[in-house]
Length: 221
Image (cartoon, rainbow, N blue to C red):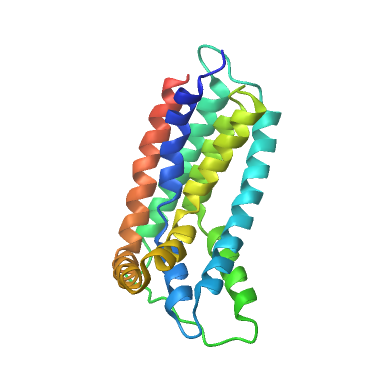
């Protein structure tokens, strides 16, 4: 049985919102926008780098999900196993995050010869290192790939999940472009708060969504 777009959205959008909670990306983007030699062009290059990584994730997730058996009415052991495995991965990540040092100050890079390229690479690197977002994003994309909905619906939902995941990269330059100096002050305050509480935010995200995925997996058995 093919799920309706509404029921599918209710399954994948919470995972996308979880993938969008990334203090690492937010702090990196704000530093790109406010550090020495900063500007909107560098911010958009950072966002482009993050988007390239998410695009690779989406292609791999859709291809992998399409290779698995399609979802059927009733128990879905394939999806259940995937969700339970990802829940365990999140628990491991959460424990590892709690064992990290309490606070690591983000370094502001010195001026470089090619600042736009450096911002692009920074966005790619930080998104690629964001394992919590990767786990939640792939879980959502896997559900989309196996849902049996039309190709158009699947593409639109995948694009929406990707855009939500990219909010920490896209939001700051948009806020700066629309709100100017007041947006800059708000971004700096949010960045400082996120940096101070990065470990707690990431650990809570991991444990919270591990419970969500575990329950979801058990209900599909």
